[in-house]
Image 1 (tube, rainbow, N blue to C red):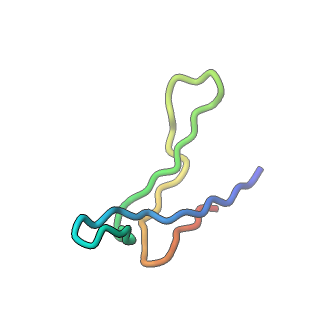
Image 2: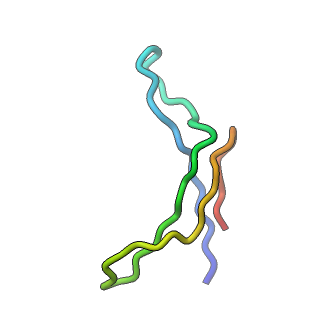
Length: 55
């Protein structure tokens, strides 16, 4: 089974009260099987200016 996950990492700016892209950060896609006790990292990507797509 294949899955594509799209997302955008952003954070609030207290000065202008808006959300802005948060670049250069590692984002981890994690999975925990049903009944499992622990998560395992499936993929790690670094955010860029545009939205990040995991395939």
